[in-house]
Amino acid sequence: MKRERIYVEMRRKQILEAVRANPRVMVDELAQKFDVSLITIRRDLQYLEDQKLLVRFQGGAEPVLPEDIEQNEIQMYRRLIAQYAATLVEKGDSLFINTSRNALQMLEYVKTRNVTVITNNGKALRMDYNDGISIILTGGEIRYPKEALVGDFAIRNVQNVFPKKAFIGCSGFSPVSGMTTEIAGEVKINELMIQNAEEVYVLADHTKIGKKSSFTSSPVQKIGHLITDEKAPRQILDELADAGVKVHLVRKGDFANI
Image (cartoon, rainbow, N blue to C red):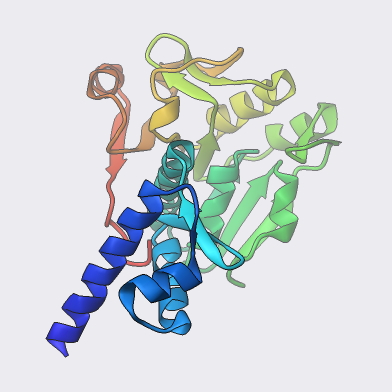
């Protein structure tokens, strides 16, 4: 059994080398080269695709482009950040979540019950979450494609809510510019969420650390926590920590199901 597993691993490694050496490889050619069945090759290709090492197409496979590899890694870290954020939610908590896709993603992983989420993210209507979570939408004008709820109606509603925690995504986070966004209409609501929550957590993967966008939602001094990943620039993290931000780092392998 062990010898067979080693043989399978060697074959898959050689298949991956063949795919990387050629623009496109065909299933029948690989089956002939390794003297195995078409089904076996398809199974090998499926395994390698699941590992995000190649891309299958009808009858063959092609290599993953460098930009695809980078994007897959970013998405992985964003899932890890969302999972970590979910572990910070306690029974009975009330939460602000803004229009960030990453912040909203954490609801998939919250297992705690009796949790109330107040959000201006219209995509919450299509989220999968456990029945112990109650969602309250702020209302307001819907802005696509983010399905953000903004405007005076949303602002008035957020003004009167004072939750335990806020989980806020952003376009950039730096010691100089603070937390920034590309959407001017979201700034005031972000400001209120940060102002009214007892604890504030910014969710930002490494591509956003040290970066700035068009509009500042909050100076660094008003942010208590940053959840980011191990690839974030260390110097910037040290500067944020010096400014009073507690940095939470997630790493590959932190959660078994990623």
